[in-house]
Length: 252
Image (cartoon, rainbow, N blue to C red; front, top):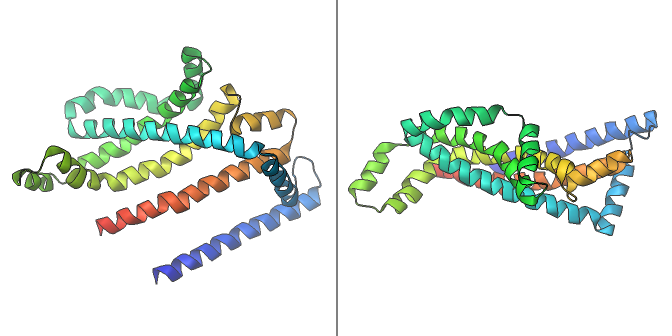
């Protein structure tokens, strides 16, 4: 039954995208504007960039930055979220800091990182990570507050070691919150990475989009955009979604 439902969902999503492409192509044909290229023109540009190798190179650079920033944000955010969720004094002390970082515009953090640390790769990673860490803290902290303490007490009675208690009895209870942070994190981080690349890097999708914008090359902008969106959707559907399904099975 679930398989049939999933199959229908895939068919409906595919049809929806095809309808969107049809409407886009029809609009491009009617408008005949250089700033509104046809889907066929965008696909043609995409293949040219793929054959020349430019797109793959810059795409891999951007994905690397997304992965590293995501990893740092999740590790630091999870650690602080658990800490704040389990200690009222630490939560009281750090909550103001977290609230402040939540409300600082992403662009401000990017600019300050480049000013303080220079136009370096480290500065770019710091800028992206700082924009995501507060969100992870908030989500994981709420999860830490809902952990079943009785389950941990039972594990303690049976003299199970602290590390095993954490990995087997504590951490699994946070899985839904970690998955929620991860899904939202990927969507947020890749957008911020593009801005970081646009402002201070000499490679990556964001850098190329800025370059194409200077020449008003809308076809190339959309070709790079569609390629990156396709990769991120692939990660969402074939990496994040299966992990979430496993987590839901564990909960049930």
